[in-house]
Image (tube, rainbow, N blue to C red):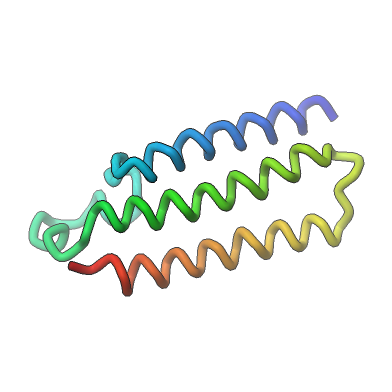
Length: 105
């Protein structure tokens, strides 16, 4: 029980802080795929929009983890876990779609 709480709150804090960094327009080097692009490829991407999209995605994931941490390990049913996992999966899929379509210059 205690280990669950430590891990849940730690992940929530890490994702929350990192989402704020991305929302501020910094941290693009940590976005998978962007840091391995050539300079010519990076010129076709709006870095601020990409950081914003990644930041929103991470913020939604952090909020889901926050609510799961608030429930604690004894109050989480299978349905709650499935809903939380589905929200994160849909959020990630939407972020990939938006990043590939709306973040071009």
